[in-house]
Figure (cartoon, rainbow, N blue to C red):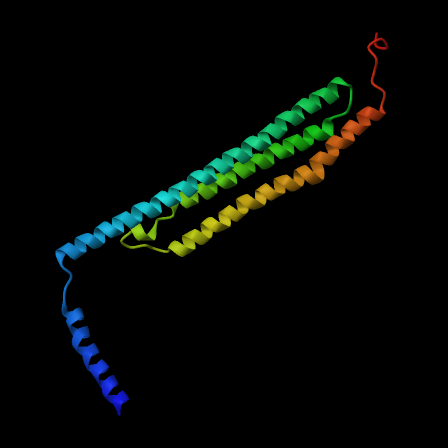
Length: 183
């Protein structure tokens, strides 16, 4: 019996107070506060996303510089091998392939950054659109860039490095031409 009385009082109060809360319209001050909160939230989210974009751009530049440094060192090594009279044609072909892969990596990262810039922030928009689908597309492009980076590492480890070692070993095994033997 006590439970029934308690439940009926809760039921009665919920209808009484619930109808008053729904009947009230927002005040101009409340609307202003909500818009300020929304603008503040939008600014914070925008700043965080911009920081992420900058970090990705920095990562892209760092990776490209590292790989370009590897190419520079390998070009120096190839020059030394040629000066010794060794065959470095395979290394030269591999360097061309590596340069193409690095250019593809930079393009993939640029596409990722462009798509990330194009995604609107739902908090900042009146009509947010299809944000989840756009972010899924951005994620797919990021995966493509990461896959390209893995491809470069695999190429370097499995192809370029063994060819450089083989060229160095072949040069050590063959006698170096002496300057006196050439007329």
